[in-house]
Length: 354
Image 1 (spheres, rainbow, N blue to C red):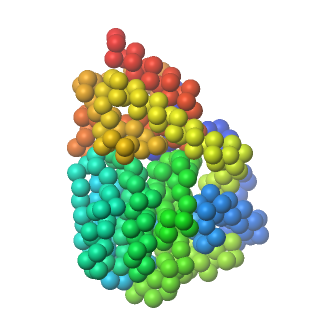
Image 2: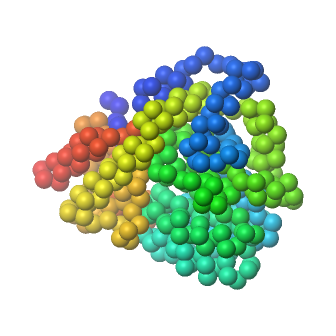
Image 3: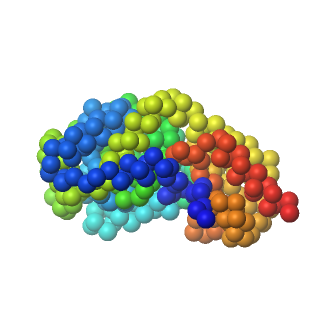
């Protein structure tokens, strides 16, 4: 029996998306692909409120994380860490022989505007890496407040991982002054893994033109060159791009306002249930809209809970890393509905009360 995915990614993929992936194949240098590519990037620009470049990468989000620092850091980078994936960005930066420092806060806590201000006021950095929604902890840091601080430092590139937030809430690329905004489609988009999108600013493009060691695969200049022809430098994952085209069309059919309201409704429901029966792991006011990390105060056996849920046709996520067993995570994003969430919660309650 298929288990409906209530994990933070990959998320459940509905039949319409799977069917779109079955569209007959075309060559990536044929006009049919150019039409598809142009349709998808135009819709992504509308989603993200940008008239700049949006690139399609046949990779995981980690690929664009690497590409962002390769193309945009010329002097020194500051990596803000509050979980496993923000820590990964620091490791990626160092692995590329880029000078970098880290500022790390306790898991469960957000990166705040004050923390960013203190770091940038030193004048040491020309780039910031920031994870908006830390999937390992369920913490959503205040991007609006942080963006306001970074705008005071026009020479600093603002590199943002929105892997588990893009398409789950409104992210205005232009208004926030972001330079690189990246995400994989296997989270709030509700598509199979293997395709990642990356919006870049004019400033990021200028950085790329003079970057000394930016590698080959994620060279923004090459992506720009091909994107102007509605194409990609290397062979793209065409089937997934067909699915992304169909998915974006469904976003606008639902309307973005209703989509974002649906995500918030699900998050609110889970948070209220968690506070009544357990407690939330993130600091108050910083819980994610797309997934909830909940303290396992009742000491449930999470593997046994998942065995029980499997019989119902569902699965949730254990805590990440050191939080395994101490927390559990429920994703409420992509095509998930409030009815799905209510049913899942009733099953967890059934397990607890047996």
